[in-house]
Structures are given as structure tokens and as C-alpha cells.
Image 1 (cartoon, rainbow, N blue to C red):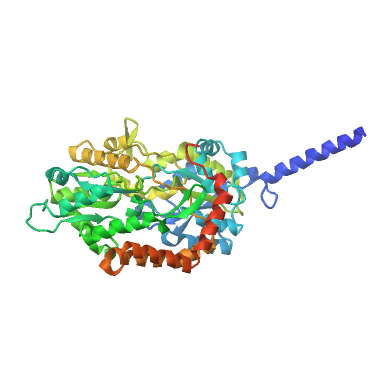
Image 2 (cartoon, rainbow, N blue to C red):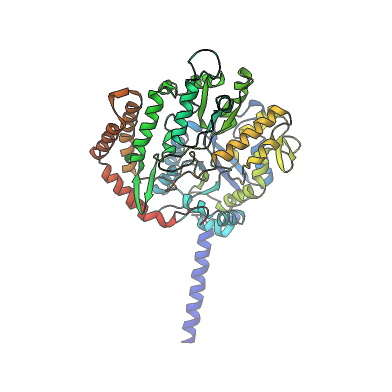
Length: 518
């Protein structure tokens, strides 16, 4: 009897060792410690590597990474505009790189469904120190890389900030006309009415535009104001906000802007916003709405034409439905997945650990004394032209980063002259303003369900057409009529089935949805 017990113990120990070995061995039984210290990694080809720097496959930064990590890396460029198509082709041909990089979570869900991605849970547990700790400190990121079987199939990091949209206002006009910064949608209408009808530039003409747009999302940015861009959770029920009274209020507001001449009416044809930028920089508009950054403000061009111009960022105004924030990106930045055929996942995890410990800073800011100098801990560019040639193309080599954006940094990063300090002040204030109010996002990401994707491909153009008709066709269709038409089209196309799919998906996945504070 005692001998049987000993035999059982030995058998169990052997089984455990075998399982342990399996977790570390490749498909052919190769131990990862003995595997070649080599990796292939996809990288976006944006066509911006200067000839003097080499190519995407071989340049100062690809060499820097190899020298610092001791890992031989083959960089596999894929066209940025066709990256998913190019990667799909490589997977089909069996030539996909070991590490695949993309920004679209749904793309990785598709690869997961094809069975071509490796689960990374065990690799992180066995080989990681930095990323393992990073994921513990940023637990809300785990939901973005966990798929339907409850395992993780990618790595990601937190964005430096999530600010995307913002508003710039001609403050000098507000001061000149004795107007306060609007805080509600009704106040915004009143302010625009006064400005448009008061000849604030003093040229004796009624040619002032109220709102122009600096991004091609016009006028859909106002959906954020009325919280009607997305699907939300009311109680425990998933609701399409585009079918609610909030969307009708949005239509009413934008139609008022259009009908009263308080917004740029040719936004439909000016998809690049070049004409609207010209209106703004020539000093003929009160507000430019779209992106938050100082670049979108076109401040240097504006003051070159109108030296007395002064601008300020504006908080998102409130409505009868409360105050939503300007649109903000999800916190997860890019995704890095491991090909299921990877020969050395240990090297991949060690490389990504290096990024979070030692690599991200020099890859982001360059070499101290050559590309930047520190000002109170903030990296300040030494020579913009040098960095433009030697560093700016480097963005896609930064696979993981701990970079953050502090609004107080900007004045330290800009040169010390008064004009550049004003730029730094405005950019810091714009970031702070863009993040001041929480942007409502009840669901961290949209479900990758083919039936929903196909439905949206048919319904969204109809919704856009109805929306444009309500806004720009005068009495042809009122907001109430538009909503009736939207809801009827939703039902006609089978929208009730889509609601059921959303609800089922939410019920099945809500347990893994967490916020940063949880």
C-alpha cells in the first residue's frame, strides 16, 4: 500500500513537471530559454522616415532598441492606411510577425476568433516583472485586452491623456461686447447671436461666422453636448441614445445654429476644414470647435493676421440633460498581440518589460543633451528641426509607454520668450479644460458582433441623411419628424434585434467592466 502511495506521488510530480514544461515550451518542444533571441514586429509605415535616417527596418532607433535589449528585431512595415488588410494577408499566408501592433481592439477580436493569437496570461505570469506590476496598478486596462474566454490576448498601456475634443473662443470679442463665457447651450446661442449681429471686427460688414469646425466630425461634436453619441446603460438596460429625446434636442439645437446663421453652413462640403480654418485665422469667426490642442487653435496664424486677437478654451456647456464632457478617448492606447506561432514569447515579454522600465523615455524624447534638456524634470526640445529629422518618425517604435501629460508642463516645454510662453499657457489650459468634465462612456468598447456591424453599415448612412435633412433643409423636416423617421427606420431594418444583441452582450460581459477607480 505504501509503495502505491509513493508511485502515485511520483506520477503526480511528473505530471506537474510536464505541465510546467508545456507552459514554457514551443509547439515543437523547444525550451524558450534555448530559443533564438529574435523577434519580428509589425510597425506602421507612414512614409515619414527621412532618407538620411535609413528605413523603417533599419535606423538609429531600431539599432538603439537592439543594442539596449540584446534582442535581434526584424521590423515589418505595414501601410498605415491598409494595416489591417496587410496583416490579415500575412496571417493567411503564415508570414505574420511575432508581435502585431494596432489601435483597433475589434481587429484583435477578429484575429482571436480565427485562433491566430496567443494568450498572454501565462507568459506575463512567468516572465514579466514590469508589465505585471503595471497591470496591477492599472487594473481597468485589463478589460480591454481580455476576450470572451476570460483570457488576455494583448498588452496595452494608458494614454498620456484622453483629451480629444475642445473649443477655442475669441475672448477679446467677449470682452469687447461685455459677454461672459457661456455655460449652457442656451447661453451659447445668445452669445453667438450677439457676436454675429454686432460686427465685432469693426469692418462694417455682417460677415462674422459664429462657429467653424477644425475637424471633420462637424456638427456631430454637439452630440457630446447632449450625450447622444453612443449606447448607454440606464439601470441595467442598454439604450441607444440616438433613439432618445436627447437626440431630438441635439437636432433642435444644431438646426437653430444653422437656420440662424450661427454656424458655418458649408461644413458639408468643406470636409477638410481648410475653408473654415481660413475663416478663423483671418479673424472672421467667434469659435473654432473640434480638437483641443494649441495646433487646432491656429493661434500663430490668427495673431499674425489679427495681432489683437485673444483666445481661450471653453468648457463643454450644460443642457437640460446635465453636463457631459468633451469627447475623450478610451484609456487604452495601442494593442500589442503575440502571434500564436511565436517562437520565443519570453523574449517578447522581456522586450515589453524593457519598454516600461528603461525604453519608453529615450524613445519618446530622444537622447538628453542631443534632443532635449531637462527643465525642472520636464524634457525641453533643444532643436525642433533636429528632432523633426531624427526623432519625430519614431512614434511607432514606442510600443509601450508610461508617458503622462501634466497641464503645468507646457510652459516649461516651450521657449522662454513671451509668445511661446503664451502658447504653452494656452495649451496647458486647453488640456485642463478638455478634461475638466467627465465624458460619459458606459461601455468601454463596442461589441464585435458581425450582425451589429452589418446593421450599422446599413443604418448609419440613413441616420446621417435624416440628420442632415433636419439640420440643413429648412422646413422640409422638423426635429420631431426627423426622430419619428429615425425610429421607424430603426424598426424597419430590425433594430429591435440589435438591442437584444447589445443587451445580451452587456449581460455576459458586464462583470469584467471596471473603471479606473474600482
